[in-house]
Length: 301
Image (cartoon, rainbow, N blue to C red; front, side, top):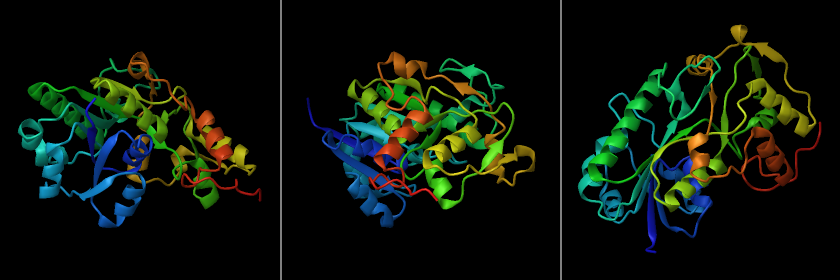
C-alpha cells in the first residue's frame, strides 16, 4: 500500500490526539493560526503550517500530495473557511486524494427533549453555530459527490481527555455542579475520536457517524465521580436557574438529547472508553489526566 500523507486543517486538541495515536501511518501535516503552537504540534508528530483563511504556497504544495484530508475548523458566517479557501484546489489539484473527514458536532440535532437520536434523526439545530455546522456538513458532502470521493462526517459530543476534564477542573477550583432536572449530555474521550478517525480512514469509509459515548449523563454526576476518585468533597450543587453562565454556556443547556453511536459501531469500531467512568478510572490510574504525562495522583487534601 502506498504511503499516506494526511493533512489536518485545524490541528487542535482532537487533531493532536489523532496524530499521536498512529505516528507510523505516514506523513502528517496540520495547520494552526499561531506559530507559537508549532512545538506542541511537532511533539504530536505533526508538521506545522500556518492557516488563517488563505492558502499559502506551502499548504498548496502539501495538498497536492495529500491522500487523506481531515477538517477540524469551525464554520463562520461566511461559510466553511477551508472550503472558501481551498474548494478549487481540492476539486482540481489533489490527484492523490482518497478520503475526507469533517469533524462536526451532535449539536446539529438540536433539542429532542431528552430522547434518543441516531444518525437517521432529523437535524433541527437551535443555535447559530449548529446551523452553520449543518450547512458545512452539506457543503462537504456535496463536494465529495462532485469529485467522487468518500466523505466521513463525524458528529462529536463533548470532548474531554488529558488536560481537559473534571479532574483538572477540581484541582484548579473551577469545577461546578450545575443541576437542571432531566438534563443529560453525551461525551467523547479524545482517544476515541482518534480511534474512530483511524478506523474509518483505514477503509476510506464515508458516511455520517455519531462519535460519542454510551452513557449520556447529568453533568453534576461527572463532577461527583471525579471528586470521588480524588478523595475530595464535590462542590455544592447549583440550580441552573440561578447559575451565572455565559450566553454560550447557557445555550448548551437549551438542548437535551441522548445520542446513540449506531453507525460507527456498525462500521466495526469498538470504543476504548465507552463511558466517562471507564475513562476517568484510566486517567486517574495512569496519572496522565493533567496533560497526558504520567505523574503521581494528586495527594488528598
